[in-house]
Image (cartoon, rainbow, N blue to C red; front, top):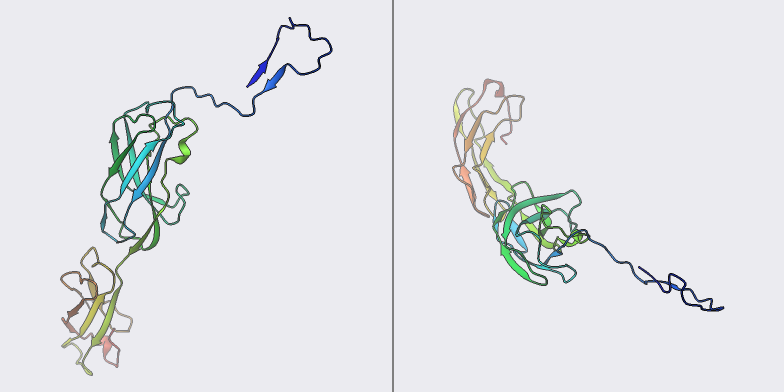
Length: 244
């Protein structure tokens, strides 16, 4: 902004060489309409979870004092976002849930919100959880759209780790006759697998799998499941073969 005194030169100033024009030290932003400035001021979320588990994060959202007045609209969506790193918006984010906020927000006011989201079954390791207000940009915020996301909340996602502890098979078996193979399996993850598991038995020769059996239910963490179906020895296996 500039201020020019005696713009019509109506005042005789003699040899005064001081400039009649002064520029302001800062710039003034001019908005075409009333704008808000939404931001997430706090997030409460667990530090760990397991695949397929429900989380119940909570958030607090408010308006900074830079806004002109109340939000120009009454509704917008907030979202819970899972990220592989501590940066929101760089392409590796996954939206876990969207939640409708209903009601205008006055200048310097705030509201709290919460919702239930489910961790995906294809993730595992260290992640960050974000809460983002006005995910669809329904609220006009002029030049203040860049602070709608929360700070990252660290989240460790655990996934099941299925292992076979032991396999037991007879030393000899007759071709074309049934024999019994016994094995013990377990999961070492925090939770059981989200779906029923199956186990395939085969000999280490070039042939299709001989039998597939379902263990019946998921094994909780640290609990073993034993299976012992009867199988027929294929003719092609008429030689020493390991059982896996």
